[in-house]
Length: 382
Image 1 (cartoon, rainbow, N blue to C red):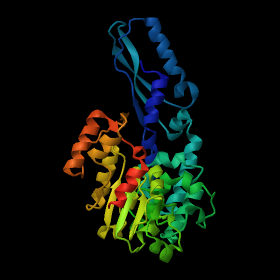
Image 2: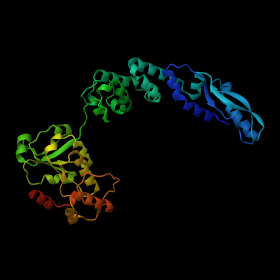
Image 3: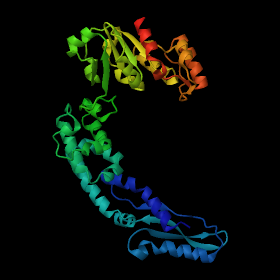
Image 4: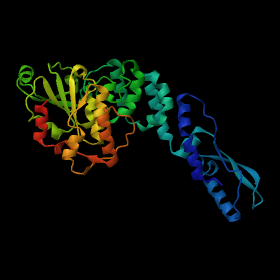
């Protein structure tokens, strides 16, 4: 026989539909919970105990909650017995008091009224997301302040904490998920829909990745950077540079990038710290398109996968010091990190062959293991 606890679980599963009916102003209809139409146990004492339990929590006994309708059913072991085959909540008050949701629904009605009065276009979102409305019930006054601001200024070009909105300084950061949902509706024509990051999506300033580079040409350093040759700037500023260089050398690791500080001076060249797979930050550096690009990474599967990624942005990229001769000269039997990559990479035949050896044996030669004099000699001969 169904228990009061099971009735409550079934009633809770109908709560979202109930909330949606409130939003749509649908009149309350008797809410029915399916009961059991069979009883297979053989103990009359147990049957009477279960019957007493379900009756004890009914509207007849408590003044609210579910109503029971009984029907005579022939059972397998106990003959014909009265079973509660129909269970229902006759009124909205019966249902909400049984779930302990009266106050919550009162607040919910007030919130949805305020939201739809402020932004009628959010009604469909509310219908689809009533639980989100409840989960954020203490925050809606501030959420609506944020929405009103963006509705009036859809392209702020400010940092989040610079926005002139009277909310806690961390409020937007802590409530980005629900605010994103709403702004996607309210200012959809201004949003950068392909961007997942909140700041990029809604035309805000953000803490950009930094690009660190070493200017290897002293004349370029003097003319454009007052003699400074070790520079770190936001990626958007790097994208806008127009340096008179012909060669860019990308280093995978920071430790090896420091090697660049000791490299011989090179005309029309810069060295750049790629930071592993963060080379993706460089994909929109369009002035790279007509430069000679040299990539130097670890001789391991990840090093070649990063090379492949970067070459996907700039097909002219050449690898340096990532060949079989260098590997055989300095390999110290270090193990690498296994890879799950199975797609075809943007590698030359020679690179692909070495990649296969490294992948099969899980080998690694880190850039740092290659002596400075060997590196410097390579560049002196270039």
